[in-house]
Image (cartoon, rainbow, N blue to C red):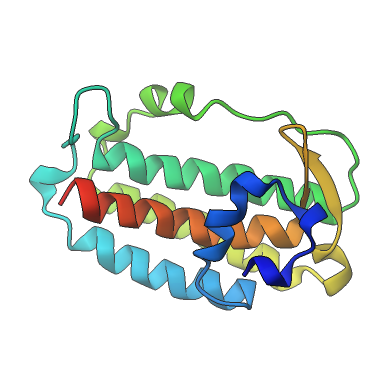
Length: 170
């Protein structure tokens, strides 16, 4: 997917996430990813939800909440960029968000409901972006990012964490 973007549209850190996006079409990728992710989460045994593979690592519930929180943040970034808001956006500390999320108190159903709501909002947002809006570049965490790159990152970020859950948790 990186070949679909100009280098100035994203920080190289996000390249691996962009490469894991579902589709060349952002909306299609978000839609496909939604179904796959919900099916994946529904298949996780309930007793595994609060499991962490090592002390100090996030639980599965916390990883899912991290995906949800990140989607909210990157969708907001995309909206700001698409609307030509040139205000630099600071980063966020994912390690501060997770312990303050109460993710381990939520059921699988609660997490899926939250994810589905946020993903549906992202899909609607991206459906309304024009090509010009998608190409708008703003600044996040001290680096350039286009609204288009943020969409690919959303899809790939989810897939990145699904891979980690499969490899280390299940």
